[in-house]
Image 1 (tube, helix red, strand yellow):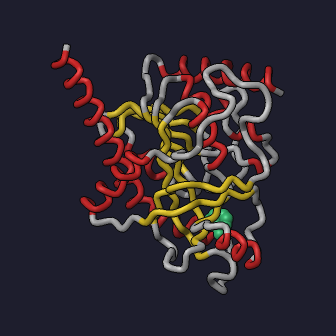
Image 2 (cartoon, rainbow, N blue to C red):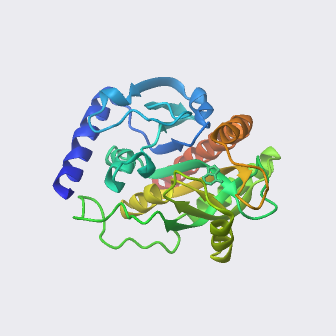
Length: 289
Ligand code: HPA
């Protein structure tokens, strides 16, 4: 598996690099279910269908498009991933994180991951936005299994997997926009069945505030590559048993669509501020010289 994992990253990176034609993304953004609207905010978008990228699979889940979108967001060169390779679709862990590795190989140093999630904390009703403070990887797999890939560490530290400065920045931007932004622990399960009420009670006992079927593998790989990670969950429903409503993907998509605009505005300004911070650091460096 390992030789092919490294080879797959090289092949896919080269295809994307060529398609990007000199565009060098600094920030990579993963768009969760129904959250694709963020891509509409990208200026000068260049779309790369997954069919044009070796090793990328066309998504089978409704609400995931299957393309990368590169361009400028808030004055910063970005690349967005519309469509994940979930492990519940049958993809091995190393395939589920292929896009993340490609973004790192292209030189992106920041990863913003978004997802749709169920709210375990009682105050997290549908429409809540939650910054991920930490995660529980309960998928049963780790994307770093196998040989160490070039540019990665064997035992990445996960003490502050979700960057504290980025979390602070997200809260500052949310306050400025008058958007409520919660913070909590995200539990990643394999899926695809939603959880039982008993499983949700267990997750609550473990300290989880929200639950979903993605994100943890991408964050693990991003940390192994030294990328900074910001995670934002859109809570689309109260988790099983917290509410007595039955769960449906259609409801998840509906709520995600309703919140997408707020999330898009939030992420755009976060990226813009990141660009400004980088410019300031560059200026300070130049003055010191
Ligand atoms: N559980 C798991 N994944 C989800 C949920 C949920 O309740 N809502 C959206 N994605």
